[in-house]
Length: 115
Length: 115
Image (cartoon, rainbow over all chains, first blue to last red; front, side):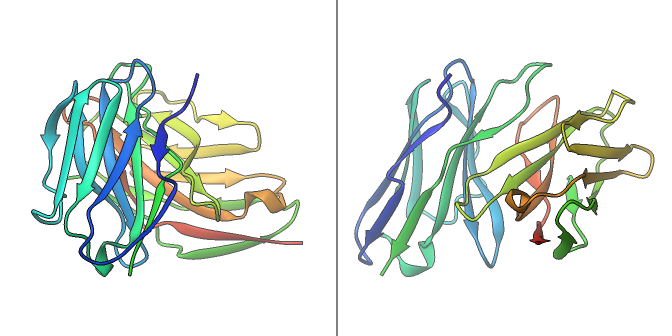
């Protein structure tokens, strides 16, 4: 089975530009997560969807960040306008909420640099 | 709220030797999952091993094993016959079984393998 697929793998953009990160979860998984990793703050959960519905977005830094999951096989994380402090690795992850599961599998990450 | 603590920011071991990484956690729940993830320089998050709290037997995956002490809320990772490819950041993580699913990570331990 294919793992969690993220795009782009790397993005360099100028401050003020809109950035859209994309994610395809593992087929059959019903939970999707967006994490951000920085040196200063480590791994932070930004938002968590269950069955395409946002359950917890308390980690979203501010209104410049938004996430959508229009269907079970696709999610986006958008930053508008981007700022240099948004530079980080953004991970998408998915899991299947069952007794044998609850294991969260990560994509390879999207490296974002805002200059 | 759950917390995960890794008290060793860095560890090093000679190739072929054994090393143990420590992790403690805090939760009021009686049933949950614990994980160790490996993050090599590529930054990909790779699942190393998983432990279900309701199982008394410690999980083992080839050279990787855990020492799960539920009463002490301790979950250490032992790597036997260390290899150069084991060099990475290692993260301990907690996930609930019921309710909102979101991994809580420790701060990470950077493991260096000395040839």
